[in-house]
Image (cartoon, rainbow, N blue to C red; front, side):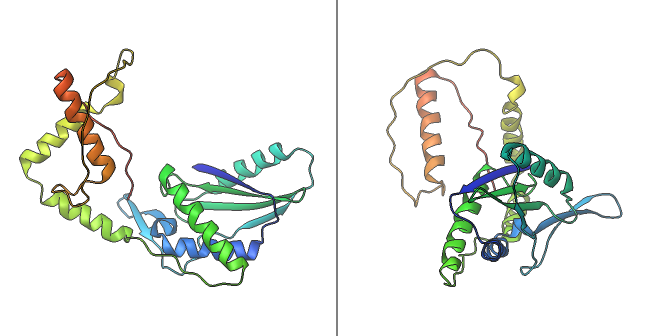
Length: 231
């Protein structure tokens, strides 16, 4: 699981926070995901209906003198209570000495480093508006189910020669084979990004391609970027 702790100098309202998180989970499909085993013991992913409340926020008023110890205990208990077939998210709202602490525990099956920033931005946006008695709706991203179907369709249309090429590339990405010390290298690079480029590359992908080509031209060797991706 992954943990995230937010500290607020003002007291957070649990009911408004619950409404805000419900709005976030209704917008992002993966927050409603659970996993079950079928009769053949195969793990099956299920995205629950949009109106499903995936997590009841647990509110705690703490009077202990040792805040860090209490937070540690709460995180440990929340981690142990995660169940991939029922709930992959635990949220605790802790009040202590006039401040509020939000403790998020989310299973790594449904979140990554990039997703945390999106989650926090959306939650803050909704909470702020609901606090002012304003209504708000988040812009729903491209559905996860549609993304999975697109990937499957793309994979089914890849030629055998292209599959072989990428399997070879993937073998070279094995971090366990990387040995020796890092070295500094320098080269000149000139690139001009066009969002309508032929290969439909994002700006960071275009930059990576430019770096790879410049390195190849300078040192006569290929380099491979291993980029974290998410749906």
